[in-house]
Image (cartoon, rainbow, N blue to C red):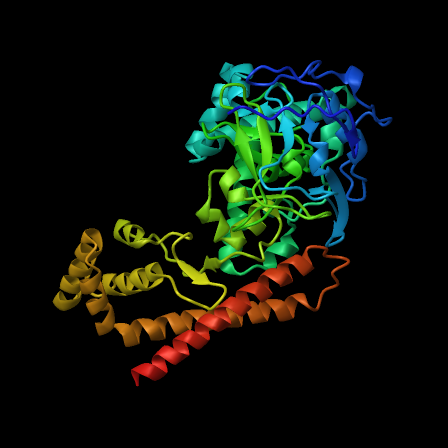
Length: 468
């Protein structure tokens, strides 16, 4: 892809535009990452205190000096606000702009932290040992993220001597992610969300174990620093089309939107340069957004799982079209997985309480698996074969035979979840949110689940009436 040339001489909210060459893939003059062009902090290291201010203006000046460009015609800027008592910084437009406009350009040199470059930079027997720890815990797929985490930790260890110092100093200090939740928060979670949160925390624990084998980081006992770096990587990284996990300055300030974000991230695969292009007209003061599922390679599986958003990113996607039905099975068979036992398929739809076909398929098949009589075994085998062959008529015929049983079973499940969420909500309302700042967000999650499950319950009750 050929990036648009952003050549205006004006500055926008701390970003100064720079003249670029006219080659087919633009390059920016004087793009070396250097502390000589960065604003130093007097204390020599970033403070991880919850009340520490985010140093946004020095970050913008640093990014501009490192070659980041904005298009002044789009009025691109970084806005600041307070959300749930947290200092939020997000990309926006002060003037409004038309669809198709290039809003932001970030060069692909070392200003971006790249897992593929880091795999070469950090290659060593010690890193091989770290990788083996991840593999032994079935976390090999997170090795690119782990590499970026190691790099972030090493740079944080340098304090103000790190060429990335201004970037870290503009990061959030308060996180609502699973990695940052305290034990009280975990007592407020229903089983599925708690499971997701525990998984995130287990990932960090494995990374800690691997870190013990990396001799170039000496602050491995600094729990807050480890969590801070983990949150930076897991909430702000993007994945390129060729699988490179990257931290990209300024791009990491775009909020999430689905299904219609007003911007998209585009890559030049040759240079690693990237740009943000508006996908729709935006008005003055409007926030600019990306689809986190798309830029991390997760797409639909993330967009339909608000609990996953909360566990990993620390916020609730209130516009999620669906949510996992919370039907948790112990050691599901390979046939059940073929049937669609996966959070991205086992869905309740938030708008009308609709129930995805995979929910009915898995529920019926799991019940048939528990029966050992000849008729149930034959029916189970016929149902599975029909599923493999795409014979929906036969599947529906079998569903009709068991409709009363599966509807009643699903209704019991839904009512159980509603009671569980209600009891948790009552318990949580006893506590002071000033002492437990994540309470409002967790209560918001519980309200969203309740609203959706009540719609599903009403649909199931109507189905039962129609069967009588």
